[in-house]
Image (cartoon, rainbow, N blue to C red; front, side):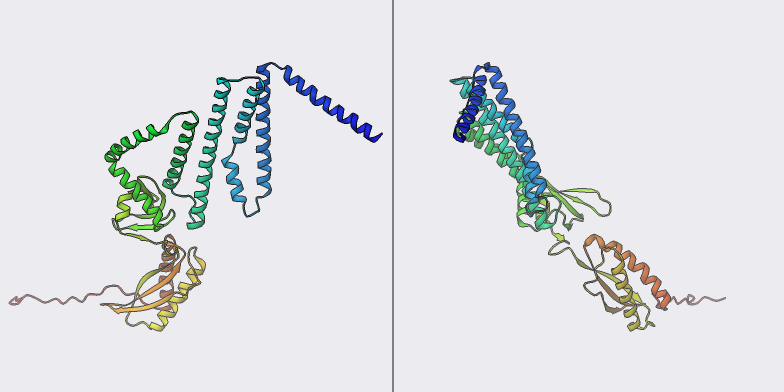
Length: 369
């Protein structure tokens, strides 16, 4: 009895499948094509929704960043892929053969290649940005690297598309090589900046986010390295300075962010000859420790120190050196040090002298009243 019931149920499912196939077979060609196209769009949309749910579920996992990058790279692409597959299936079921079917197949292949290149470009951009952030702490990678990678992928995609279209690229490559020589001669300065920018990036001596000072006088934080120039944002004016890569590669550059961002700053101070130097040193270090612990940007993991330097004309000069988090933090720390040292020296009776000149006046010889 059980076997007979299972047999009837199997026959019923087979009959349903046959009826469904019969309905598809009886559909007009245009309806068949439209049905397969809509089915492909629906399946693609469902796949993307499932991928979004998976990405949200693994947000706390170590590969959550790559999941977000992958989701951003293939955004809307599953719909295009499955729609292309549905269109090709619809044309095939509609009985289209010969050159028309080959044309549809070529269009589908080109569509898939173009979308895959777009996905690769998006992934490359996300990967380069992530690598730059992990390597140097920068929020963004250099535009030059991203553009070069995109250009290489674009050239690869164009070659694949032309090959699928049946176009011989050998002649095209030869023509581009000859014309490229003429272009290179006409764009010597531009190409010089391009290769200088690539050399700057590969040497890793200057990175986005680094605070640099050039021997030509410009200084600021590097915000981007492009094909022609490097962008520097000055501090505190926050102006944008564009430095040609060839000049940046050949000039003397001081990078205040390498080998590390933290640095010592020096504050020169002078006190009166009548001062107790032991007391001066103790008071100065006490104020310095207080400032470093309270002012943003100051670091207390390395003790500040005082070094007496010279006997000048009217004061005993010394240097106070303190540790700050990065180059731009020194301004606020210096500001607080000057204010509090002036106040504390006044309270402790420590004199900060000003220049003194003794003037002797005498009357000209032979002058009489």
